[in-house]
Image (cartoon, rainbow, N blue to C red):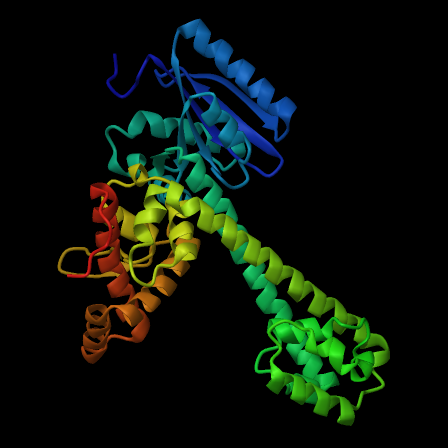
Length: 399
């Protein structure tokens, strides 16, 4: 019997598409037992599980599955597979492309791609490249899964708020510049509450002082500025059709602020239930949003072989690209961009709180590093700290 193959396993490769998924099933000896397509629907998923379970029962085999598109187009198919208790592998697209360059197929179709994924199971024990293509999925606990959903949603809303605020400020500058000059930021709560007192911006010049004074966080100074603006207010004729746009944008900004605030509360409540988030939060500069985001993106430390692989995932180091006498590195395309952004932002704040870290940044800059390079270097050090903290279940200490 060829040592490449594992006869007690039913090996399944799934090439994930947006509408249909191609499936290839091998018996563990390298023989393709079945090939078919399913739709991305409950009916398609039920058909897949029926075929797979029938094949496994006939051969008394365990089921292992690899799919291209985990946590992307594959949702919720991937979570249904995990609920069944099957071992699931994610196919790293970057490494798969490299694998295909070395071991090209006769053509490129979804069916051939599914076969190629099955082939990886046979080769992963003997070919390091094949092993790197397949990454076993470790299911995070419910708390970290929730944190991932909430923090990503928060990030989307923050980006939307920034986009609308920029547009709103630009439109206000063009229509009523004297009104925009009342605030340093059109995103201020008191300013948005003033803007929404009436559904037409022109009516704001007639609002009584008593009504304006009731605005929370307004302050006497801002009240005086508004009263002065009312006396001198002038409006463009274009407000006939732009007044409603300005009102809608100010209402949307208020709504987004409320939603973001509510998400902040939910994230903060979850932090104590996540071992990863609770520990990361003890690092100065890593507030509950940063800690929750990193915990959500990491899920579990069992996914990573070492702190070096964690650093690659967080984008705090590059891949080694040395060859012979040449020493160099290249950008890692498998970095989690959400986690990288959080890590960089939190590291920047961290250097403001810890003097030793601040001095480290200044030293790197004096050596000729750019600020972003120095921050990434500091972030790489913090990855080692985070790895040790979680492994040893210890909080951050400033010695």
